[in-house]
Length: 195
Image 1: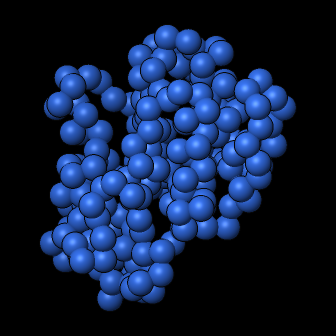
Image 2: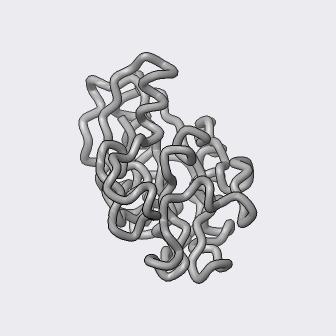
Image 3: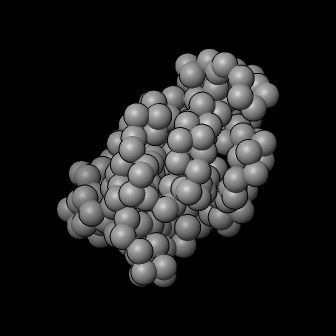
């Protein structure tokens, strides 16, 4: 099962009217399709377009993971106004309105109630607005990585390790800067395959 924001939701949905001409109206082949082919697994998507980490974690804490073996927690590009909060010790009471508290409570919910589920986390790849401004900065993005390290959960830092930069982003993102106020936010099929 995959949880996340629009980058997760887009799998199997058509690209919107802000996409570049070559992607507009085509059905997105999300990263889930790559997992299906590479691993030979079934994938259920719980992506919600526009969701923040706090909203994603609220959905995680309400989900029944009984019939799932693996959970991938994506998301974070909508956290540009998020409240970071503070890392707490394991088994604490968490402020679930903050990023640290939301991720810690979601991870503890899964690991305590569904210990058979293997969790994987990603720090999302960079997104841009206004041509050169990062949508969310690394100080916010790395919170997921810090939480993953506390709980010994595998985490891929796509922000720092994807190889996607201003120089090659037009190849990997579907958004047409002329139609989206210079946003580079949603990965296209090439970007999803790359990730």
